[in-house]
Image (cartoon, rainbow, N blue to C red; front, top):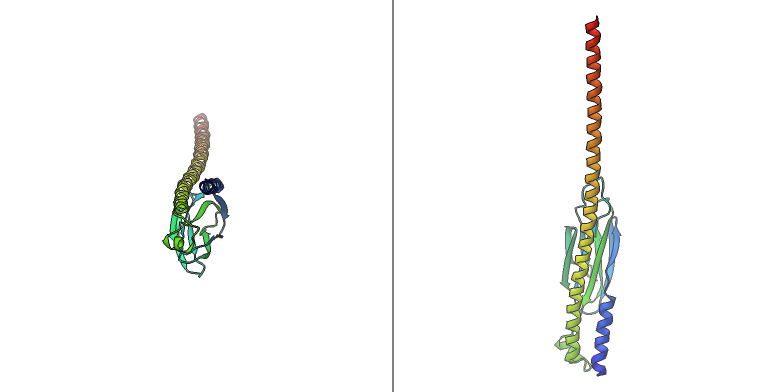
Length: 207
């Protein structure tokens, strides 16, 4: 019974530790994730959460570049406001995830990175303590992680949409007030012009 309860507790604690992070990107910001085993699946997602854009148009997006320990690029995304990614790690070691903002406007990026490892037949042959039950638990853990990551991705996109809607609402209010002020100014100038025109006409008739 202990052999079943221990992996289950580990799985529960793993799910409870899943969390997304955020970073403000002015130019280039990098985060690092260590991969223990070759051919592990590295997956994740990120969403650019717009700051309060009032005068300028919406930010067109940022770039993501993933670099392996050897310095070669293993994954890239260009000019996007948010996306998912997944690739197989060619080597074990430290991987670098760099967000590049090509514009001067700072952007806050909410991101999540996960390194998944499911033991294969080779691992079973090497480790006598590793049994098929642990493999099934690892598969279940990865399936739960995938669902949780998707929820976090959708939540971050929802936050971005709310932020964009709020920014759009402020712009609409600003432009509406500006139109009313401009209309009032034009009407006032018209009244002044007509009054002066009539004043000159009356003075001319008197003469």
